[in-house]
Length: 452
Image (cartoon, rainbow, N blue to C red; front, side):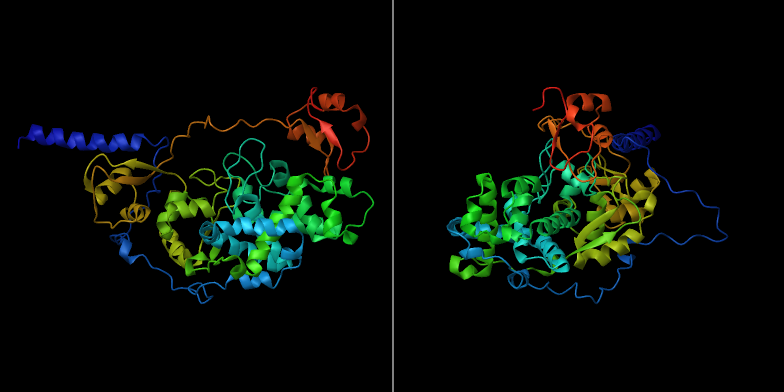
């Protein structure tokens, strides 16, 4: 082979590598160059040599306790015997017994989190059914000003309870954060109405609606039949029926031909606090968890990168937490956040890629779950340091629209409401001439000249 041919081959290989890196929109982070050591530095650790911490002795490797007996012991409402609508819904759920069982099997990791929170607060077990009624325990994505997450929280409700809601992080989709907010609301409604049924109805239709329809009546004196005659939206009455129907099935699954799933060792989730944000794909590789599972349990993060406005935290199976922590300790924090996935476009040893982009080969191997001595082919998709381009806007989603009215909540002021919706205080006062004095809970403010 002539010298000219060799030179052309080298130039082609280098060009292919540069083309891959050019797809990342930010320069590759390189660690600072240390002062020359007095003796040769030891080689970086091989993937096989990364220390894996011994499993903790907190029972993480054992299957979690079944949630069903824990919930039955906490049931506080009449469930099956409440009213005929409960039985109708129980039979409806039981018709698709296999799908019903499978849906609870998928929900199991998050269900265990909810049961833990319910026990901490000494709440009735029926409220573990509430995310199933709302969403089937799925992290429903936000669309405009609609409710989102497994608890179906409205944006204003979430923000008013301290959850961040923006394009990079939506706390309504965070299973742990949203559960704490939702159960805070349930506790508040119970204190206000002294009735668990009305706490559920207030969660569905709003506390001010419940207050208005109850009037001066004492809810504790209302039978199921009497409460059923209160002029709530039929959906609100049905919401309570569905909650109690699920509790009825859990109380006696054999009666309905239902087999409730039991948790496996990987169903116990553990909250892991991080010292910095981390790309979710990198976290999946380091923990050995499937990326789709990791995204579902950490759905609050709307992109691969963790938002700088959210506390960096991951929900991981407890059985994988030690592996993740050990592997994360082996990756410099400077490489945690910005990664992009690209086809390799050329063949070569992983070490040559690491040398070309200035990354320790051990880090690149960990990020791609391969050995340091692996050969990368042109069809391999590599996870490489560097920020990805911002995704194009999803034109299928409905644009966020300003609501027509705002319901006065505790702590609201005219100036704060104007700032929240991007309005001038002068316009807000002009549209609401009666709101110059004290604001009253439950009143509605117009947010535009055509609002009703």
